[in-house]
Amino acid sequence: MHQTTFLKALLTTRLTSARLRASRGERGASAVEWVVITAILITIAVAVGVIITQKLTAKANSLNP
Image (tube, rainbow, N blue to C red; front, side):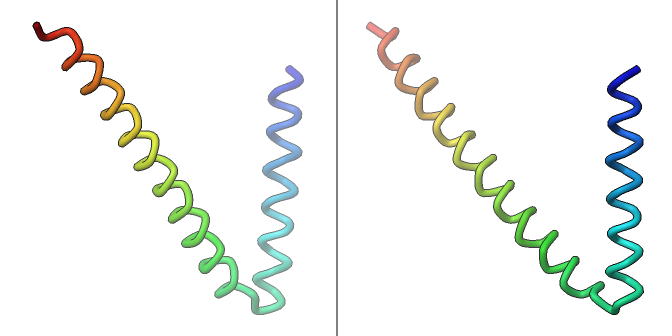
């Protein structure tokens, strides 16, 4: 029950904030922010993938006689 209340409050706050920004003509800044956030998340995901691949490859090579 508490999670749904929190989620509803969070979404309401985000929606209100987005409406205020749109009414002030700040729509472009929001798009740029999303691009930057997405780029950072993709970079983190790729870095984690590379680290996991390196660890798995090293472990597989150590198992080969």
